[in-house]
Image 1 (cartoon, rainbow, N blue to C red):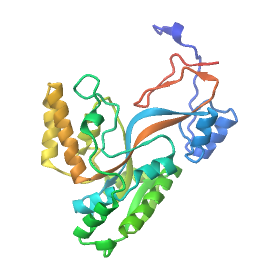
Image 2: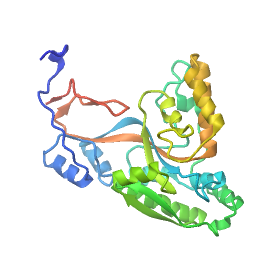
Image 3: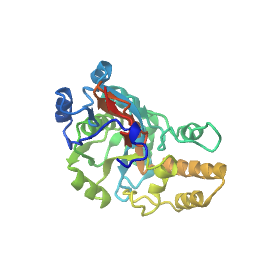
Amino acid sequence: PTYWDKAAVKLTKITYLMVTDESTALSMFQSGQMDVGSTVPISELPKLVASGDAQILPYLGTYYYQINVTKKPFDDVRVREALNLAIDRKAITTSVTKGGQIPALAFVPGGIADAAAGSDFRTVGGTFYKDDDIATAQKLLADAGYPGGKGFPTFTLLFNTSNAHQSIAEAIQQMWNKNLGITCTLKVEEWGVYLDDRNNLNYQVARAGWIGDYMDPNTFLDMWVTDGGNNGTGYANKTYDALIAKAKATTDPAARMATLHAAEKILMTDFPIIPIYFYTNPVLITKHVKNFYQSTLGFVDWKTAYMG
């Protein structure tokens, strides 16, 4: 009653339901037990969008795989780059995720302003590799000592429980086998166990994702400094660390952005990570909910929402 703009607020009560299973969430939505849902089964998404029961919203984030660079054979950058190039991201976004995601040929997503007025950091920075570049991937793996995948050890791809993560992992598992002649097994863990294994470097390759904390490239780049709290790969590069430190101390916008571009180039040369796609945010929204707003950072503002 003391809110400064209370006249603009239409809702009197909002109830949040903690539903982790995608099928359960969809069933509850379709039966009228919930009005908005953030968990959408990817197999049902195109149909839900077509019927108007789901919307695909922008989301500032990157879905990627991270690599434990402290373990052989992943300590060899040629192996890491080969894994990166042997993935058909367009096939994943069009045939698996089906939510308007954009194949990631860099790590920082679009939607962040660069120094010049009206410019975008991703557009200015461009891309760093070609999608589905099988020939180059095969040569890199051969140069690393594994021609046709011969002698390459079977490894494990770790991800947390989710039908979407499972489907993506299965697709990439097949691509690596077909394109490189290598074999990986899939390992799924509940969220807490998965995080512990990732943080303790108890993995070889693992699924990950990052949503920006704020609208700046630094939120995607400073996490990869040596011993960074969100690094989780064992990756360390003193030149990269110095560039991130320089960017934080630089007040000139053009010089700062140039420094961050240089840092991303190093990251996309060393490949401790494999960007897969830039996120979108599929949301279930009943037609009775009006003025629903969710920012590109994922924050929901219920202030002007109402039931109509």
